[in-house]
Length: 246
Image (cartoon, rainbow, N blue to C red; front, side, top):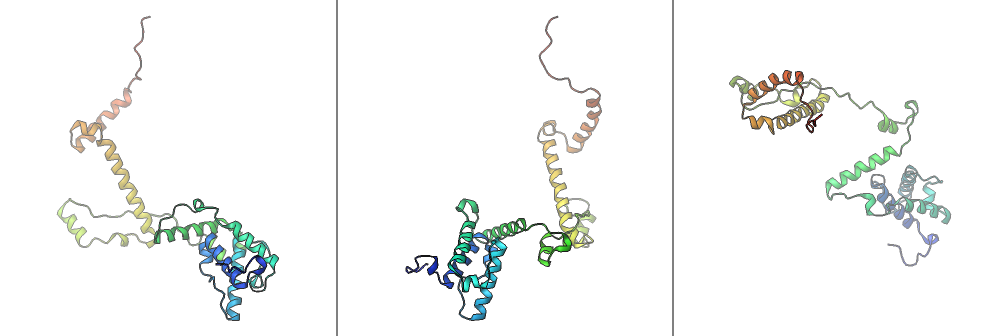
């Protein structure tokens, strides 16, 4: 809280300026302000280190004025006012701008993801030869892998006894089947997608005509294959009102 004797920006002490700046940074971009302490330490070297880190965070947030450790430790009223006005303008206008965030660890994870996305969107594109190591981590593509899959052998219920014995014994686990570990997630996604598509096709086929025919699945499919040439040779006529008398 601000002491009652503080009536203007001129009365703010370095401790209050540091605390106000850190709390604004945490409200605007939690990932940027979380490592910074709102309490100014008593040691000279620790003060310089915290003030320098705080100045770098303000520059990363987009402050265009001159800012350094002296802005927080030996600042003038003009510099302090400019910096605090900038930080206040960056604050969310209301809770609606932050969105409904769930409590607990999921909320912390969502805030961290949002802060990382805002950081990447706010970073201008730089040619590869001019990138710093930090920009290379943000904009580089060296860590990306192509979407390469391989077939997976999944355990199934039923089937011949020797197949069930294979699944219960020498069959390798699913994560160990792809030749490369980077192919495991794409292979699982592709397998799940094909199973989901087959399930939807089954529901579409047996939710209507197939269920009404009361035929086994094999006979129903054979019947559909036999009727397909007839449908192509004699397509159904469009329904409409019968022609009137000439």
